[in-house]
Image (cartoon, rainbow, N blue to C red; front, side):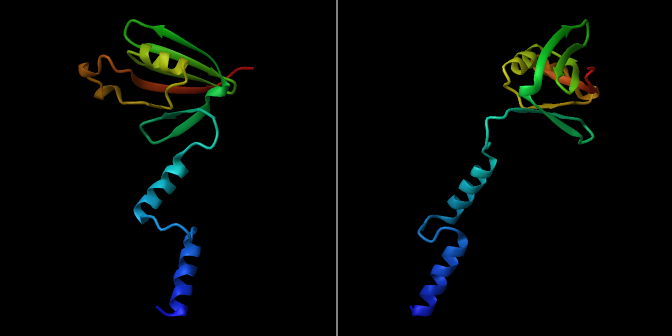
Length: 136
């Protein structure tokens, strides 16, 4: 191997980011992706997703209170944030309410009520998400 090709090899390694690392390229790519997905702070968010693709997230730190109302047919969860009030309507929302109170869920998706079935009896199913500005 000529001196020029050794230099080019080291130069290419330097441009790749780590000239001393001789690891597997697939492993390097996987670790880079994992580092990008790792949260950089201890901020916990909750994201609401509508069927039309709309999304809105709130920081759990701004959640003031939550309330669960078990209705005859539809359950209602009301979440009061400092800027907005989020109302969730759906079925079997007790478990979701407990997850929210423990800051344990990060994504809530609304589903079309036509597609709910009896097999989702133990699953929380959100059929409507309403976000309104808080008064005050």
